[in-house]
Amino acid sequence: MPKINVPKFSEKLRDILKKNGITLKEKITTEDFEKEVVRYLDKNNVLHLGTTYRDVPRVTPIEYKHDGLIIYMFSEGGGKFVNLSKNKKVAASIASPYAPKKDFFGAKGLQIWGKATVYSRKSTPAKFRECLKIMKIDESRLSPDFNYRVIKIEPETLRYRNTRSGYRGITWSKD
Image 1 (cartoon, rainbow, N blue to C red):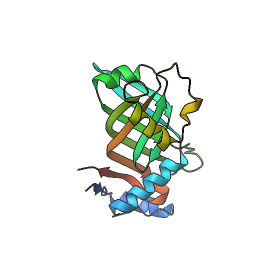
Image 2 (cartoon, helix red, strand yellow):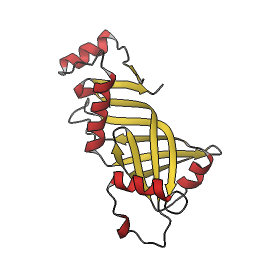
Image 3 (cartoon, rainbow, N blue to C red):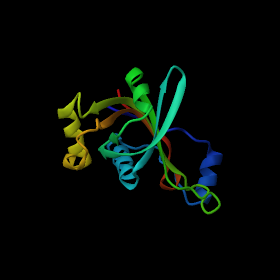
Image 4 (cartoon, one colour):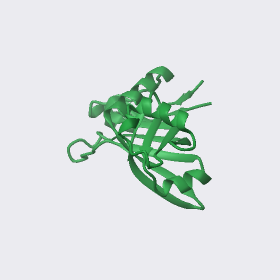
């Protein structure tokens, strides 16, 4: 069963936020938090995927689809696959456009830590096709000569911020 951690904030910060029409959430159910994260995932389509190997990090902007909290990315290749073949631990972030001069407390974003699994058309065709269905990608439109791949991230930890809506650094952790 996943756990939720709602950080405690000082009275000073709470007062500042209250003057700006913001009330931070003091508690939330796992189900409500997951629904909020899914809504955020629905509103976006690009994340920044962080992989690493031999202490050399790599960050790749890439389009994603999701099924609940599970993230799927379709890719033609790149250095991220070398990293993923050696280290399945990944991090990703999604950030909404932010205009601090217009709304200082308007930042919205999601951080994701988890394990990635790579499915390829050639080595894991059944799992690859299953992912394509979830992503609503028509395999018949793909060149038969190319070994396309799907990266699937199962999150272990999520941290969400949408201060305007009362979410400030709330963390979800999978047991």
